[in-house]
Length: 127
Image (cartoon, rainbow, N blue to C red; front, top):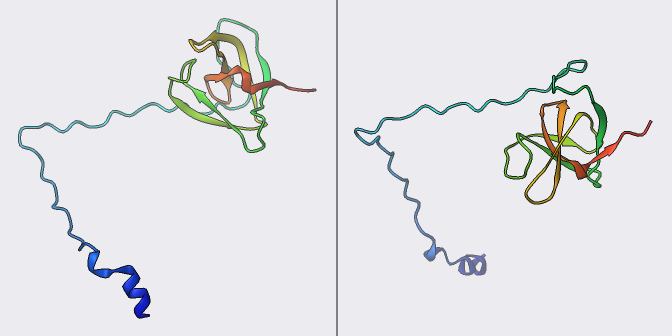
């Protein structure tokens, strides 16, 4: 036991000192946080008008059994990722695509949520 205590060298441990409670700065107005809207999943059988009647089913295919695909608010990795689709999840796309600055093609989802995904992680649904 003496060997263990010597190896720990308890004399070098610092004593815990609690930090003081902060006090508000006088004259500074505290702002309430603004809520960020979070898209809700669409119920099956509902649709979004995109000005096009072309819709298709696709399946998430990242190539990994436990893979996941981020759904983003706009086309590009710089956009906010607000939803995650698991490998094998069937989605509905409306055929709208955009090319990002990095050369990636992004495709617009309409179900289960309204958002954008990198097209290279979607595959055709096999009948």
